[in-house]
Image 1 (cartoon, rainbow over the protein chains, first blue to last red):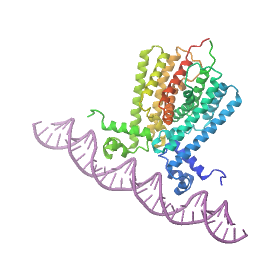
Image 2: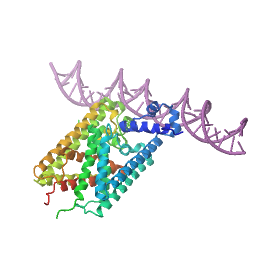
Image 3: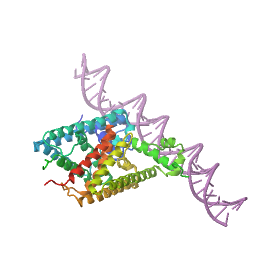
Image 4: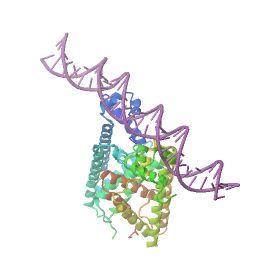
Length: 205
Length: 205
DNA sequence: TGTACATCAGTGAACGCGCGTTCACTGATGTAC
DNA sequence: TGTACATCAGTGAACGCGCGTTCACTGATGTAC
């Protein structure tokens, strides 16, 4: 099988789009299968219940996000050996990528599920938590490499600084969606970039 | 009437708590009225349908948020005449307030409804949009006053800078909720504070 | 190569429950004259 | 002060629809011997 997309993947893709636009509860199985063009029983062959759909979605989403970060990281490290410059390049690449999304970032599943925790068993919320921790670790690694060379101008907690990326992306997505201006997300990322630039710029003393 | 909370207010308060924890769709009228201790018809006496509940909630939420910002602004301006210092004080006050919430910030209705737009008529999404625009305007006013005195170290769009507050609060709430660590929100606000400090610190040239 | 069985990827029909909504009605308080 | 009517803040019962879930079944492909 597996030539092209599997039915399972099509379910996930279509469900994700619906959920990001309307929320989990408002995206019915009925509606998903209508678009996938299978019967309801076909859906339940792939997922034993709706909760399992949520878990599969968040797993896929996190994996995809990780891959994007991996690619940006690799490319940024290619372009500069200096950890600070590589980080700034990475942020610029990320901002550009966000700006290139045709109709704006569709939304973050982590945020969606975070705002709907009670609907899910602990599996989903744990996945969310671990995803954010892994992103913290990822950015923290960079920050430590930067700090080994550059002195920060202000005393800040490195984990909080690492979280700033996730926080900015989540916040940026919310305000961009709410104000219906896709550019706001990239703008916020560029402000974080500006902060890192100032924070680690050599003191002129 | 109006001694203590009205029934209408109790409906709103209980509905808000449920919606922030579980999402709009997952918070049933049935569940709300059970806690308020009225019948379903009692609910429909106050709100003609569930959509009207959403609109009333977001209006109340925005008004409450505005009041909080007003208070912080007033207090900060009392404590310093310098616009930059007053702004930094305001951010510190905001961070402290967020840290003092007993079990963390319960979530932002703007974000909740933004992630569930299709469920609502345009009234709700428009309210969301206007709320964010008014917050932009509010912070922009401060930034302009700061810029009149201090030169920024980096060229940044003042509207984007104003949006940074909303974005940070939204993002901070998401990661604090998702990671189940209420302190993360205040940390992110303090990072924005650090950015403003560096951005407008007098150049040492 | 043929036969038997297993697995995969679904179909079709039915279920019961809970949800949002409606409608006719009510008892207490307020207002006009 | 009494009477008539209006409004406020609900009650109680019923509705129908859509939702998630179940269950017995099926036709195509894969595997063992």
